[in-house]
Image (cartoon, rainbow, N blue to C red):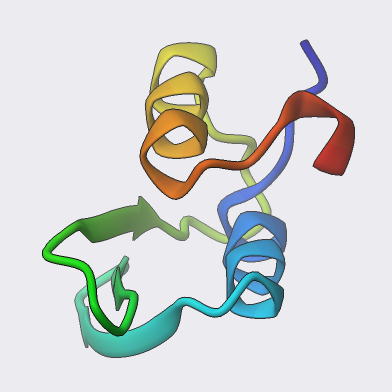
Length: 68
């Protein structure tokens, strides 16, 4: 699986219609209109997200690996 930074993942989900609700420290919290799901994405400089976290975020946001 391709690794991606938190900053790039934020840009990707914003293109898919997710809206930045707030920032708490280094965690960006996104919400999608009409959905109760919150995505919490850690943005630590340009560090890559860990694979387990990335898979979980992709599943919640319905993003395919080909979109990365």
